[in-house]
Amino acid sequence: MSDKKVKAKNPAFVILRRELRSYFSGPIGYIVTGLFLVINGLLFFATFFLQNRAELRNFFSLLPILLSFFIPAITMRVFSEEKRVGSIETLMTLPVREIDVVTGKYLAVLVEALVMLAPTLFYVITAEIFGSPDYGPIIGGYLGAIFICAAYSAIGLFCSSITKNQIIAFAVAMAICLALTFVESFLVFLPDGIVKLFSFISASVHFGSISKGILDTRDLLYFVSLTALFFVCTVRAESKNKM
Image 1: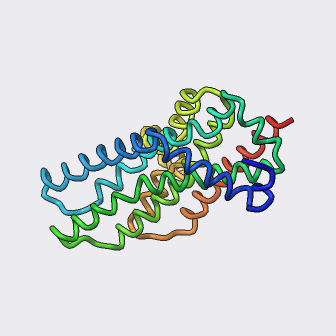
Image 2 (image 1 turned 45 degrees about the horizontal axis):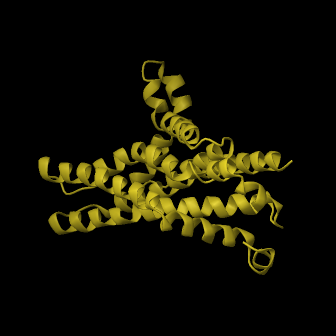
């Protein structure tokens, strides 16, 4: 990437395009996407054939759990690999700001996550052919999926920015995402007041609300705040690394 190109175009856009080219030119992107679709397909069609229900309720109920594994798999290499090989230092010497680098990489990861999710729209077609699905929860489910992809992508990106080891980045991101997904389940034996208090930080609770077709500003604010928090933390982490 030359200085001339960075100046001629928005730096974030240049980094976005570079990240997407790198991801889809190798086997990793296709392997992660393939595994995600195989597991989702097995779960969807198991519900479809074994329970004889043409609906996506089970798909959406398990989606936060699957994304807790697969989005960290997408994000683990974004900063960690560049730190390991030393190319991040070269990138940071170019006339770009830390926020441009993080924005470009974050948008690339989010696009990759949404591309991974996009083929599941085939399930909607299947449900329409063999049943009469309620499109309110389906639209809400995919809207919630976009929000949870955005939040988990920011978490994964932050974890990748604080270590050179991809495995550590994956493990920490997965642990955080799973904690946010299951936090309410962990507190099931505590008093209701405490459960309700901590349920606000549960990603699956907010996702579940949106997936029912209910658009509550509290749910939207939760995902926007969670995404913004880890995005800002990533920018600060890269700013410290540049010093």
